[in-house]
Amino acid sequence: MNIEYNQLIDRIIEHNSLDAIVCESEVPERAPIFEGHFPGNPIIPGVILIEMMAQAGGYIHMLSKNFEEMAYLATVRSAKFRSFVTPNQVLTIRSKIAHHGDGYLICKAKIYDATGAVVADSELMLKLQRFANEQMRSHIKNIALQAGWKGHDL
Image (cartoon, rainbow, N blue to C red):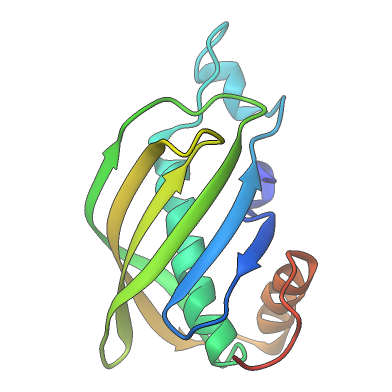
């Protein structure tokens, strides 16, 4: 997880279907966000957990469509935080597309800690649109390749 660069997915573990993905992320030991959230008791803000689930959901679409469109977080329909996420935790993110509409998708996601306990869950709407430019598309595609995507259509 590289919070400063908003790269919250470290590894793509499974992406063998068009509607589900399993990702993994390691919370860093130190990050500037922990200095204020909270001194002496660092925890990941809930908004970061929501973005992590949105990124996983977006990858489902982008991988299945070979990065033809970007998925942007549009609406948080629901989100629940069940426990705190602290430095050095390894998290598993599971996301599934619940509905694919014209120009958007609805995904449901859960984040699990190393014991298998649910840390957070959400239902999110992601807006789909063409990448703003080829540089952006190439950058996002390279991040997916570094995370373990094999570079082929599903």
